[in-house]
Amino acid sequence: MARTMEPVAKKIFKGVLVVELLGVFGAYFLFNKMNTSQDFRQIMSKKFPFILEVYYKSIEQSGMYGVRQQDQEKWLNSKN
Image (cartoon, rainbow, N blue to C red; front, side, top):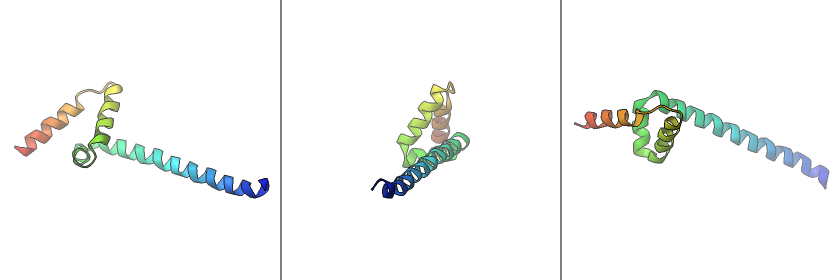
């Protein structure tokens, strides 16, 4: 019975590993896109504001302040 479970366990492990790698690369891509594009951050503020809040908090934790204020100023000025 143990021998028949080994291939299944390996497949499960590989599947979990692939899902985790996709998650890490997806998070990196999303962070990089938000970090380089103010327009993309505006889209995120409309569709997924909770993700944008995590982005703002993470960059503020790293010592970069003022991005949130710059975004809000630009978005308010573009509405007027």
